[in-house]
Image 1 (cartoon, one colour):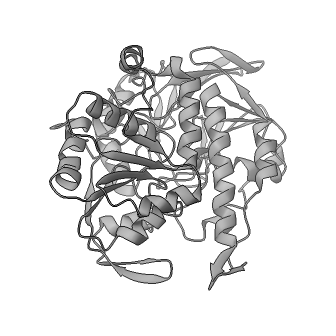
Image 2 (image 1 turned 180 degrees about the horizontal axis):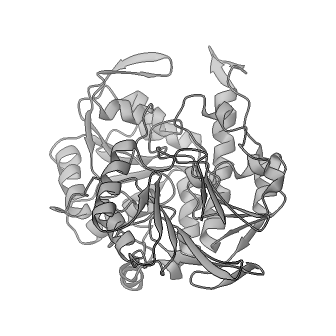
Amino acid sequence: MKLTIWGAAKQVTGSMHLLQSHNYSILIDCGLDYEKETYQQENQYFPFDPSTIDVVILTHAHIDHSGNLPTLLRMGFNGQILCTPPTADLTEILLMDSVNVFLSKQHKRTRGKRTSSGPKPLYLHKHVMDTVDRFVTIAFDKDFTIKEGITLRFVPVGHLLGAAAVVLSIHEDGLEKSIAFTGDIGRKNYPVLIDPQPIPPVDYLVSESTYGGRLHSKDTTIEQKLVETINETCIKFPGRLIIPAFSIGRTQALVYSLNKIFSEGLLPPVKIFVDSPLASFATDVYRKHHHLLNEESQDFYSRNGDEFEFEELSYVQDKRESLSVSNYHEPCIIISSAGMLEGGRIQDHLYHNIQNYYCTILFIGYCAKGTLGNRLLRGDPIVRLRHRDLMVFATIKQTDLLSGHGDHDDLLNTVKQQQPEKLRKVFLVHGESKSLESLATAVTEAGYSVCIPEKGEVFEL
């Protein structure tokens, strides 16, 4: 059995791992690597022949895990894509949106005229539909035989609706070997989502490391942080709170938390706009798979009805409605995508409010290096929007309480669920260098053998 780490090696994005056994090739995830500004050009080539891949297994829908699947098909892949039912639904939405992002970058407007100065799209809508046709969905905690001698099981890990650790059992040369890929590990007591479940004993573990060396805030709750921020921004002063949020996952957790706040009367009513068509589609997927939500969410539904719908909340549908939000002069909360501020309607709201002293921008997620969100978080006094340099007068805040990733302790505990005498090697991926080193040190001190792979590094298992 041979493992090659082709993505998310010493960085966060672009998850892609190749597992080969007896001339059968399994690709675990096929994400976009968007660490560089030239990521569209970078992602159009694979370090292997896509036609040689027999099957793809998808851990979850996020673009850094799923976003290059249509390119893989376009370049010759002709097999099945195995995932959970919610992952199939959410991935379709995200890939369609990815095409829209590509097209918007290709066709920019200069002085009202449409030009084609941007990079060529990696794929188009037809390639996404071809990809969707390849999905084969498998329920959690069910053994699925990929082929004789290779069995797959999806284990729930929180993080996002449908997200799973991939556990593979492979019979090879008279021996049974097992390997697990964590995908992205969630955290306990996260809004809407179930807690991560233990991964069964395996011989090898490929683990994400996003929050290695970092611990989430534990001195306050999500609701307390939101109440404090809304009170300061919208109640004491007639301001507006802008929350950049990923449309899938983060927005649903945020809306549910706001629903609890206002249904319990913890704040006077404040108008809330969710300005993201993608978020509306994704919320329908959450409703469709409601039986997979956590017990607290189920109880809230039985007592109060739809977790994602309440009186103060409005879902903005078209562009005209979105523009009208800018003319809403009462205190309000605007939730919009994209979470890192790279494209999407959030840029319209930033353009109109970045110089507003009565505006607070609250970041609730990770912002990769080079993104507009990262520049604001590091304190840049001037940012460029719509070809204009704008002074930053709005208040910039951040909280990790809505991060969908488990922290250092969660990651370490995931490894510690494994028996040190059985687990032969831990491969750490999907993390920046500092996070990888911190987690590697802790895992090593706990008695496990650890490796931080280079991109393209090959391991005989």
